Image: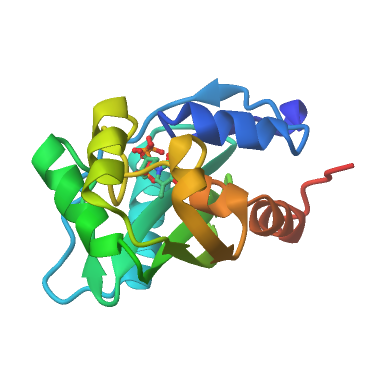
Length: 190
Ligand SMILES: Cc1cn([C@H]2C[C@H](O)[C@@H](COP(=O)(O)OP(=O)(O)OP(=O)(O)O)O2)c(=O)[nH]c1=O
């Protein structure tokens, strides 16, 4: 892969670690700085794909560029990457005892500029969360900057009754779809 030169357009250490599970070490890591405001009425899956595309196009790099975007949605409502305790609490109260969607796009920009994309769709169901459970989770701080106010790779998984999809997808880089995308571009992954 290194002869092909791959840039991971992401600030997320999780995406780097998940990519390593495919045996891929990017040649460069370049976080994409884009406006992440959803458009009025934008569907969550369209938003996840648009964000992935915009990240892929935002950075200057020769070679291949790989990136993705993770969106947590309750119905058509896109939840924020929570920056305050109040915001995280509101998200957890909303997610408590019901299922929600976690949509992760993966986008590959080829050296000729062509974009390939995949969408990984997951359904996650939290148990009914008691006020004490929400307080404890908020106190742990893992919600900070996370879409929907939680991170499955931490304590939150103990509050998740079930999920359908892939753990790597909810974390930010679905291994199945990423491998398929890289293979469809003719990149060898053995
Ligand atoms: C639902 C969920 C979200 N998240 C987080 C990761 C991100 O902070 C956020 C999704 O935002 P993203 O924009 O997809 O990723 P990012 O901001 O970490 O990095 P970059 O844009 O540079 O690639 O949600 C988890 O870590 N685990 C989870 O289980």
